[in-house]
Image 1: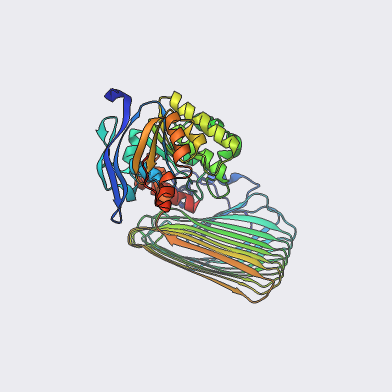
Image 2: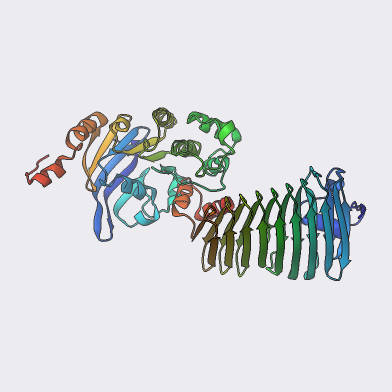
Length: 250
Length: 319
C-alpha cells in the first residue's frame, strides 16, 4: 500500500492508565476512503482506542505514534485533530441544555448555510422544520440524539470519522439511516472507523481489526474477521479456556 | 399619569443615549398600542399608556415611586416596555413600585435596566406586587451594565398571589459586568396559583452574585418553580439561596440550580425545601461544577477551540 492511500497509521501504540496496560503493541494502517471496523468484546479496548485517536484528555499520554496523513498527531489536542479532519461520534452523545440543534450543527459545520444544516438533518431522517429549533437536550430520545450526532458529523465534512457503537440505543429504522450515512461519508471521500461488537455493524465495513485485551488479535477483510469473531468471541474462547483450565491455542 | 411625549429631535439626548444602550430608538416606542415608561435617574423622560393600564409616577430624590394598576379583566396585549437607567458614572437610582393586578387581568412587562457607564452606581428596586384572582403578571428584567464592575443592583420584591393568579419573573444580564447583583424576592402563593422565578447571570473578575428567592405555597394546588442558571469565572462569587415551602394539599414545587464554575471562582447553592402537608411535594436539583467534560470534548471533536466550546456551553446554560 502506498503512503498516499493510508490515512491513519498506528505505530507500536500503547497506553497505560493507573499502572495498567490498557492498549499495547498496536500496529495498524487504515486506508483512505473506505469503511473500517474495530471489533471485539466488551473491555477489549475499542472505545479507548477511539479516545486515544481523538486525543481526549485522559488518553493523551501514549507510547508509540499516531500518524494522520503521514504526520504525527500524538501531541495535538482534540480540537487541533478535528481541524485536521478527524472526528468522533460518541456511543452516548452529550446533551446540551439551551443549545438548539441549529446552533449545535452550526458549531460543527464547515459550511454553516441553513440549507446545509437542513440537508444533514434530512439525511439522518429528521425533519428540519421540526428539529432545527429544538434544543439538543434531554427532550430528545436516545435515537433522535444519535441522529443529530451523525448530522453534526455530516456537516463537518471530516476526512476520518470514528463512530463508537453506532447501533447503540437506536431502532432498526435509525440504524438503516446510519448505514446510509456511512456510505454518504464514504462517497464524499471520508474514511470511517466503526467501533463495535455487533456483527450487523461489522458487516458494513470492508476491512476490520479484531481487538482483545488491549491488543490486536487479527486483521483483514470484514468477512474473515466476522467469521472469527462469531466463532471464537461469542462466547469468548479464551475466557472459557481459562475458566476450564484448558490450554488454549487460537 | 398622562402620556409624556417620548420623541426627541436634534442633538442626542439622555433619552436617545439610554435607549441606544438597550438597542432601541425613540421611534420604536411610537406604537400607540404598546405602553412604555422611560426613567433616567429620577426623571421621567417619556411614557405612554394603553387602556386598562394606570400609572402614577412621583419623582423622588434619587429615583421614582411608581404605582401601577392593571384594571380588572384588562388584558394588555403587547408587553409594556420599561427602561430604568442612569448615564452618569456615579449615583443612585431607587425605584419604588407598587403593582396591583386586578382580577383576571393580564400584563407582561419587559424592564430594561441600563447603566452603561457605571463606575459606582447603585440601582435599588423595592416592589410590592399584588396579583388578584385569575390575574397574570410577567416581569422580565433585562440588564445592561458597564464593563467596570461598578454597578450594584438590589432588586427586592414581595409578591402576593391570590386564587388562580400567575406570576413569572426572569432576571437576565444581557451585557456588561455584573458588579454586584443581590436579588431578594419573596412570594406567597394562594390556591391554584403559580409562581416561576428564573435568573440567568454570568459573572467574571470579582463580580458577586447573590440570589435569595423564597416561595411559600400556602394555597391548595399551588405551584412553584425557582430556577437559577449561573456561570462564574476568574474570582467571581455566586451565592444562591432558594427556598420553597409547601403547606397545602396538592401544592407542588421544584427548585433547580445549575452553576458552572471556572478558574478560582466560587459558587454555592443552598436549596431549602420545607413541606408541612402530607399531600404536598417539592423536589430540588442542584448541580455545581466545571463545564461538563463530555459536552466540551464533543464540541472540541467538531473543531471548536476549548474557549469557544466553553462559551457555547455557557450560552446554552444561560439561554
